[in-house]
Length: 290
Ligand code: G1P
Image (cartoon, rainbow, N blue to C red; front, side, top):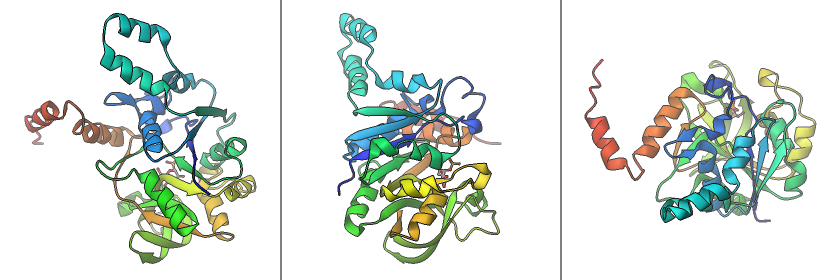
């Protein structure tokens, strides 16, 4: 079955980016000229996803507002003759359709995905963690790469990339059993292991294609690392029943959910933006000596 739907959890407290995220969700912090989550929505649409489900929590209306139409703003832009910006603004409300589902208690990433069960139904779906910003200019979007692999191998797919050995504690880490090109057969999966216990330095990075069977796994997944219901633990249980593969995707990933990662992501996106020439000249002119 084709992958048509994508789930984007966006209900967390954004604790790694406080105090910026005290009143606004991290997903609406801007990356150059767009909220972080818009990059994931655009990636999903460019990958052929037909319906997006965003998991939000109370007080997260900024996300809904961003993807809604704003007729007063549109009228104002029209009257001023700013047709280019009018098009840009209109395009945002034409993504989708986007459905919203509420996570009433923040019990973890796995629990957030479980909230989308009814809207996803009995079909495979993609999961995009929007703070992992994936850039692959000129190539297929990372979600598309996983969707293609899902079709080819008929198994759930998780996006993998090597992470610095000291950072394994921040990620889901896999134990690769066998690698064929970019496809990785997984023996085990551990959420946020210690440096000593990490089975490798291959991290799970914010993109998944999962079969609907994951929902029954999530329903019986106990709280794991950090006291949260972890998607990683449910995937590990899924592996006992169905094939799950890793895929070493092609593309550059930025962790826009942390201060430093967000700064780096802004530089990367800025160097691909319309202002790239002037921005590059600005960086070149900086005195970067200690
Ligand atoms: C989540 C997942 C983790 C994954 C990471 C990628 O962790 O639980 O397995 O490696 O995203 O960004 P979080 O960043 O929500 O702590």
